[in-house]
Image (cartoon, rainbow over all chains, first blue to last red; front, top):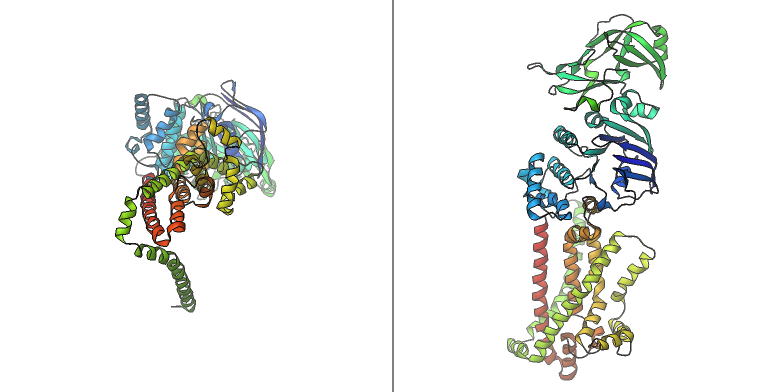
Amino acid sequence: MLSVRNVCKTLESFAINDISFEVERGRYFVLLGASGVGKSVVLETIAGLVQPDAGQILLDGKDITNEKIQKRGTALVFQNSALFPHMTVYDNVAYPLRCKKFSRRQIQERVASLGEDFGISGLLGRMPTTLSGGESQRVSLQRAVASEPRCLLLDEPISSLDVKSRPEMRGLLRKINAAGRTIVHVTHDYTEAVSLGTHIAVMEDGRIAQTGTVAEVLRRPRSEFVARFVGIRNFFKGRLEAPRGQAASRRFKTDGRDFSVLNDSEGGEGFIMVKSEDVTIANSPSHTSARNNFEGTIVDVVPAGLGLEVVVDIGAGTAVEVAALITAESVKALALRRGKKVWVSFKASAVKYVEQGTRSAGEWEDDGTGK
Amino acid sequence: MSRRGFRTGALSLVFAALGGGVLLFIVAPLVSMFLNCSLAELAETAGDDEVRNSIWLTLWTSMGATLIFAVAAIPFSYLLARKDFPLKGLVTGIIDLPIVIPHSAAGIALLGVLARSSFLGRAATKMGFSFISSSAGIMAAMAFVSIPFLINSARDGFLAVPVRLEKAALSLGASPLRVFLTISVPLAARPILSGLILMWARGMSEFGAVLIIAYHPMITPVLIYERFGAFGLKYARPVAVLFIIVCLVFFVMLRLLAKGRQDAQR
């Protein structure tokens, strides 16, 4: 388990303040925040590249705050791969093993088996400068894993990759995590957090604004900032059905309701997200182009930002809550109040799908169907 | 051609003419020296034991000085590239000092520290050697005037090595010394090598400081000076030509070697 306790660090341009969080062994923890908010500094503090001014860092019960970088048991992967340009891919991956004084044969075996796991066996003889972005990032990951870290630290490992290589990279990260390795992943992209993370922390101005499971933080943001940054109130876990022959219209099945999604990706386990500002509420069913229309009961009307948030339960049996952000005038004009029957609609194109791959359900404390 | 392009062209022409003058100024004396020196004279000089010994002495002392001082200078350059410390500006200034002070003055200064009566001189006597009139003294004088070239070049080389790579290596479990030896030095190899070549070449051509510390044994620049003083231009010239040829051969060889390394790195 990794514990970061009250860590503070002031640098020239900014500071991180009172950073605390815990990452259980085997978890995939995503630190989410806008760029320049200090996420990377938190990571470098854990890795020991930056000495904190105050606070404590514990890894598996051992205080590593002042431990030497090379003895911490953490490995850091940078946004732009930090492969050593004067060494072959093989020598890069063998580097941490040589530091640990493995025998030549042990190193050969280990590099070969890792090469197969990561699908880079064919690259081992190449020089890093001849690799594509996706390939070098895969090699960087393999090299970091070769050092057998107790905690793998990733600094925006996907952001610099082109859109095509991203799903492959996410798959690889899931695989590493599924093998039991604890991961702390820093990103500014909430879809990465949703797609990969079991738990997330949102950072704002050098502070942690909220931590929790992905579902908790996304569905119940505790502050205005978190809400605006990741505020996807409508967030459902389920399965995307992709029948052959249908162009880009998909059905997304959850425990409670099915939704229409405009997406051309392959089917599979994942999440859909709908911004509350994209959801319309009406007193009667209306004939529009919106493909998602549900009748439900208003369970709550609460102020949110500039308007009001109307939460409607559209579930049949189990509760499925959909939140709509609407103006106070509309609430008044439609006489919306708790307990009233209304129609909720949103377009299939307003639904964002994020694939999640396979992960055991136990890692999701929230089952994704609402409260 | 546009008016502006024409004017730039004319200006370039003027600059090229000026450059040609400077080039001629460098090349002409050398060429005339080579032309005024017959092959027979050269062959005779090359057979002269005194000349051969002095060239050999100059080569090995300058290389020795470079290699011995590199052991301390390269890590020091790394420190200058990576760490900030109080009075760093002063330290950087001190490193450049040997370049700006007259070399005979440098020799006098060095003599004060290395003379047999001095602390270092006495220590050397105890260990069975002396700096004065010896190869050890020649190396000290050569190193004194040439070490800034190595330090500055190596420091610039280390500055160009991304800190990110060093951090990555540390985080992969390498000790700082291992990172220095396996990441920083190999990645700065080319500037370090070119610094070594510069330091070596500068040491080899040193005259003033060496003359004061060790007139004997005679390095080639001192020998050229002595033959000129005692016998005149005609006797000094073949030695100078021979020495220049030997230096150029080594210089070109090392340059080619450095270039080969660079290609291997990319």
